[in-house]
Amino acid sequence: MRNNQPVNNRETLLPEGQFIYSRTDLNGNITEANEAFANISGFCREEMIGQSHNLVRHPDMPEEAVAGMRTGAAQVENGVTLVQNAQNALREINVQMGVTMEMVSDISHSSSEQESAMTVMAQGVERISSMTEQNMVVVNQTTLMVEQLNTMVDRMEKSVTQYSV
Image (cartoon, rainbow, N blue to C red; front, side, top):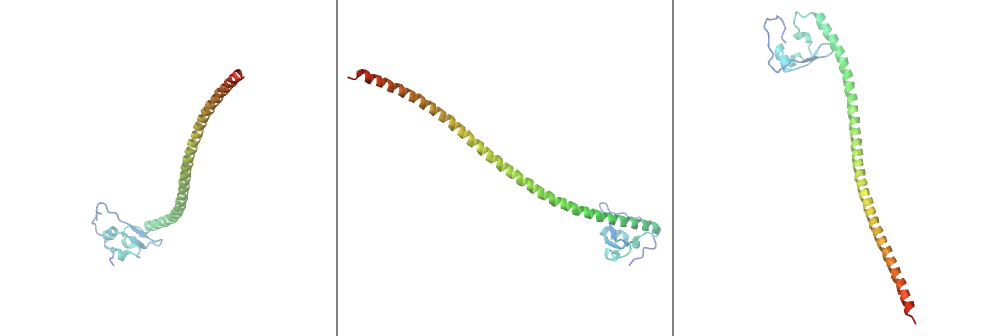
């Protein structure tokens, strides 16, 4: 494995669109690194995994600064746990949201069916109302005809009485 000594004064530029990434455990050992990080450090990824991140630390970087970053990383790790718990809660909210959306869909479908049924019923009531009006016309016409027939019967009775011997 390569020793990061001596330090040269060459600046290595990262190609546009690339980023360097490494991840460590709480002890500062590298657990992940992307290819760009490996290329810029001069190590291959397989060499770095499991090694202390000090492997790529500049010798002029004080140990206290590195220790401060590790402390901060531990706090972030604890924060990530909270975020993971939040993700579980979000997953639960998402599941409940799915159930709620299903219920809303069912209610909407039922409401639509109910609206269709109400429309059919309103059409039925309208037909009954129209038929009732037609029946009233027939009843009025029948009443008028009965009155006319009664009038004719009365005339016929008078005629029969008048011409009977």
